[in-house]
Length: 117
Image (cartoon, rainbow, N blue to C red; front, top):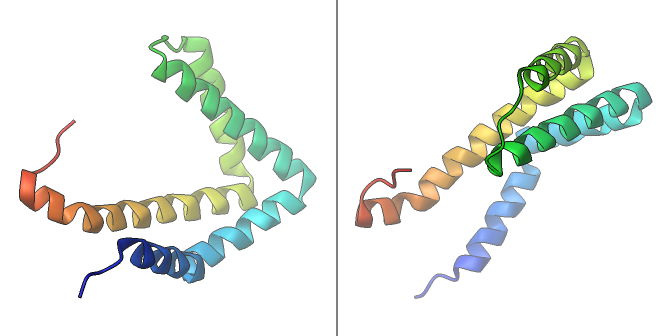
């Protein structure tokens, strides 16, 4: 019997959606978006993060001023209880996805050896 990998992938997606981690992430995300001040602060933080990532990926150097601004922004969002909680569960969700990715990639790793960057 052949396994349809797409069916398995959709089952995994469903399991992720129904997981406690995702449900908690969704709840905190909704809470942040319902609080206008928190939403603006979070969006500003995300925009800054994205701009720095794009700059870095294009090979441009990040200035000391940008680093300091990013540090101030991180300090601000960490002081906001809702955003700090959201960021914590985002980190846990990211770790979970990373672990799932390791499991999925195991057959290829066994075949080719560890993929090194």
